[in-house]
Image 1 (cartoon, rainbow, N blue to C red):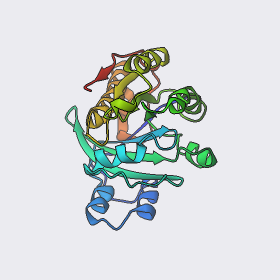
Image 2: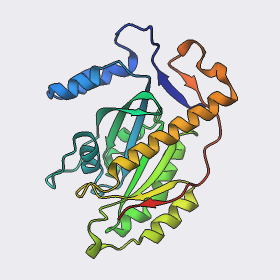
Image 3: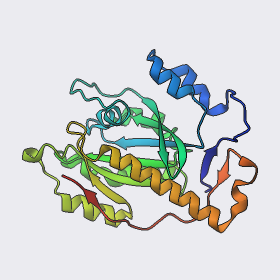
Image 4: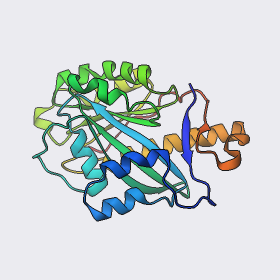
Length: 244
């Protein structure tokens, strides 16, 4: 399947496009967040999804990255929610639309509808929960079934601050990531360990994929089309990372 990246023409005037409809409808009352969501001054827009079992820390992980905040009072996400954050990578202004998905089975039909068009996935498990780790393969199957072939994935073992309650060793997580052919991080949203690094690495992998495709066929970006196709095969396994 083709892999699309949204690229904004430099000459394009500010206008409402199809991928801003949901932003307008779902934007919370936070004026700073509204300004970031409506900002069209960017070079690329990447859609990222955080997936995994319920209670592995997906929402806390997103809030730590987007707002640099943490609270243990989160309730289970109902359906799906998202935040927008703009970053600079490789001299480009990249707008990230980060979707936080519900982990419960009853929301699966809703959440998988958002897989299509996602350029990257953060697949998360809880290092203190064996079931969440065992479910990783099921989530990988979901990605393969509902997303594009070139979507990039990073495996994340969250809550590495809870060492006394750990049941999944770093080595097991790393081994699984190698089997899946993806990169691996252990993180803590509470202690802000590796949260930013995960997002930066995922964006870099997507940018590298874009660069490789453009080197192969520079005409892909001609005309600044929004739906630029990147059809190279997915990258192989990468080195594991953890600062715990």
